[in-house]
Length: 262
Image (cartoon, rainbow, N blue to C red; front, side, top):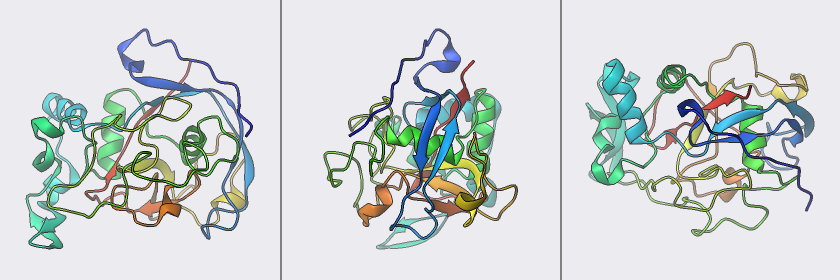
């Protein structure tokens, strides 16, 4: 299997701590014969950028909230969907804080909307990844691989998926599983990752081939990577696309940030 050349980022200041350099270059984005909106496969060039090596954790998000007084969309609305008495239902005052315990401080933060994730990213001097950046990073230098680790079928030694949704979301601590070739953890499973782009069904046939930013407008934002309660393993592929309203939030959606490399 072909690989591309990579190199390590200098991490000399706090803003790039625990980030990995994704080197500039071309890659083949998309897939044929899978999801309806994953084709055509097309060559994309993406500039150097840094990506968080793992999803933002409960502890990370708590620091943001404690220092800014920020209130998430779920907190403002006063409810969120959660698991209670054997079913999913709207639960009053359910929010990210509900799951922030000492044992879960290094689990990915959940119940954050795209808007919440975007505000956190701006606060730390970063941004959310474009869909193209996310897919390039997920592929981890391997050309044409299905999953972040290669083409082997997913199992419980490779990522967190196929779990039943429970009262406490069965997320795992970040860095529980092996990273991909770029040193990135949880690029498949655990929690979906918000991306910067508006979702468009025609995106792949219309987007530009250098540093694409997604559709100029839309209704939903892109989410990538799948989550702990995904049963269909095809959703764990690098090319799989998902979408969700930026005003919504769920117990299986989190995020990670990127930063331009200068």
